[in-house]
Length: 400
Image (cartoon, rainbow, N blue to C red; front, top):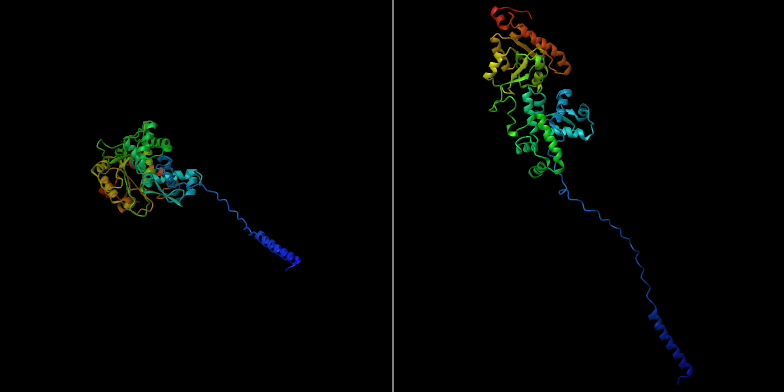
């Protein structure tokens, strides 16, 4: 038998085993290392971009300035740069406008939209368009006015409003605004400005009727037929004269010798003022580029007190008309530009005044008084025995 001491030892051993088992159960597993907490960047939500289509503004359908204001662009190009393409910086100086200002863009964009020029201040060069040349080199006031009307009607919304109201008379702004928005799609914020610009243009151009009848300009008969003769200049008041000088000259530049608008400028800057100063009402044929010689022109040619004939370019029509006039032994004043070749019989037997073909302001000022004296002399010597026909008939030869 086991003694008490052994029994106690076993009891103690058994108890230790029990205790160890409990300890093992109670021992906690080591905690797993926590992963470092990564801080997420806070995403700031940006406001959604507006839809560019929904906020899109339609291009402005009419210029910022009137036609008369926009005409300063082609006029400066003509007067100060000989009608040649010009850079925006120099044009800005000529217009007395800042080269970087919005105003320069507005006026050059208006000139472009009216069809007067090509390019704006955003381009390297600005040049005259054909319509701009027609206006600044116009041969007579009627032609100039017609071309201005054409430029005005280049703005589609001006033309549409003019036709809609059958003229330039507009209703009060409340009703005008309704129509501009509903019929023509103009934003309300542009209505006041449109009304002012439209009215100013119509006033400056003397527009009253609708677009369809605008071509029947002053001087047309009741049937809208344009006159074959136009008055270029007429003395007024006490200086009014009954003497008429009829001008025959080329109307179209047909070679590279003379730039487009050359003959219009000669007529406007030289012949017309010289004729007026010499005491004549100055008239010419309303050819507008046509080569047709009408019977009414021949009648005007023969009935005029004096004919001023420009022999530049040896234009066949001019030479024919000159022959008709001279065959009647009526007075003529002959002129030509520098560089024009000689016409043997005429140049040797009659005096021909030669003007500077550069047409600079300085040369025009120099030639103008001389041309006036030449015209006066042709009239004052009309009864001389030295007319072309009398010279031929009598066989008189003159020393040049």
